[in-house]
Image (cartoon, rainbow, N blue to C red; front, side, top):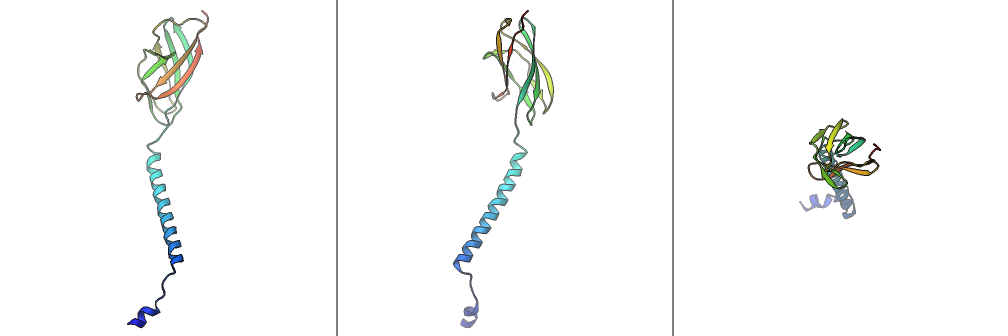
Length: 136
């Protein structure tokens, strides 16, 4: 029986260590690839571009907005010069373009600069634009 065990050759410790490292790297790459495919579908970007601003009446402005992100976004809050403005919630699918009618807290003044900031329901800023009110 002793002869039987003596005739078997074992791997050297160096070869065993190399095989162990190779298997560990291969498994970690497979897990990383699998986790990447799980998270890619759930992630996306929320971005809205204001394409045009129309100063309609003394306290009303219309923004032409487009969802330039990769996921559906809802515009929940609009701020003009860091002050809340009255606007309905607006939901945009990726690539969709719509008009957003907002009411300012005070009348706009001809020639003044106005900064429009759009926020989603979580409070993240998703779009910003500066425009100058036209001369009347």
